[in-house]
Length: 220
Image (cartoon, rainbow, N blue to C red; front, top):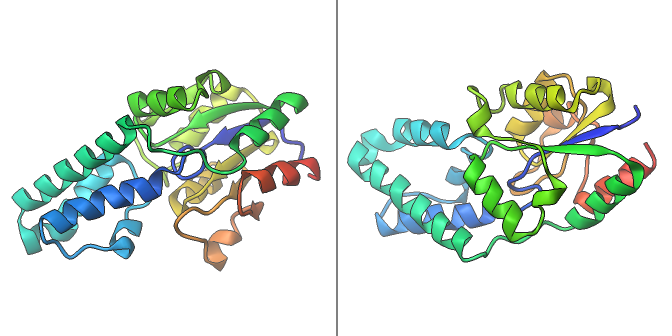
């Protein structure tokens, strides 16, 4: 497989956002005396904002009431917004090194994130990465969230390369399953939750960070 184009996920892969979002939601839950912990948060990892709201209501409305859950969602997003605006999101290890290697090798790339376009633009601007990803596919561009393959199929279309020459970089189960469903090779760089054997079997590799992805590309 000769990799000519890479499709990057964003949250948990390029930016260390998942830990921050968990902290935001935990603070919101604590303020409302909700039984909520990291394992609860991990159940919703990698889904769209709209799907999160739908699922959190489905899971907790009966226990706490829809009004409390709506307030939880409001507080969680407000906490996240404050942290994001304060510039507290850090880059994951190896981002700049991998991008530099792709430039050297003439490997094109695109960002395909389940986040919304304004949030993506802000994070890229804060990290001075906007020019590195001139083409972005966001939640605003698709009708179905991961694990549906729509976002990766659209990204592949924009790159105009055969799928066998593409590589998806993902950190989450939903992302890996979406890439697998799109029939595009995928490397998983786990963030908060590692893969089981069944998920590992769907990947080209499971690697610890983006520096390891750079080294993998040098030998594949």
